[in-house]
Image 1 (tube, rainbow, N blue to C red):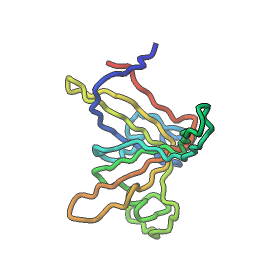
Image 2 (image 1 turned 90 degrees about the horizontal axis):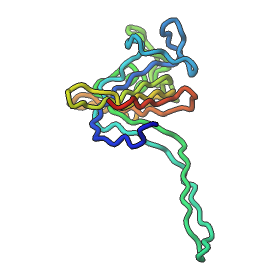
Image 3 (image 1 turned 45 degrees about the vertical axis):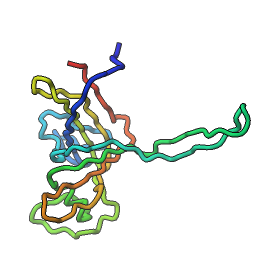
Image 4 (image 1 turned 90 degrees about the vertical axis):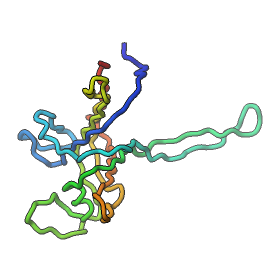
Length: 189
């Protein structure tokens, strides 16, 4: 029987990895139906150091209404439909994906090759996100709290500001419907 309680204190850090749609990994073309494995780990691109404060969110459609009450009058029936699931995270490092989204490029950056800036009107990069939530262990060794796999679009949550400090871009990762999306909560250690 599964442990439904999962009652535990948690101090979790996130590690985010990404593989873009159309990439070739182990002689396979990544797509919504082809997920690369994590061996070797270099199959996946790190999105950078995920800073504290990453959060899952939802966009909801409020479909609440008033219904007649058996006691007289009306009562409010709350009904909300989730329209979109997403993860917002800030990273310590800039990446080619952030540069590409910020500059509105239509393709991945190839160093030394010029591209036309700000031509992409729908600024997103589609692919697979592998999110590893690591819990701090009592002996100093972290253990996985969960591993999440999403077919997704990555967009900028907000434009990075150029000021007198390290740029820390905010990414909004939007889950797309896919039967291969999954989450795994490993057995407690």
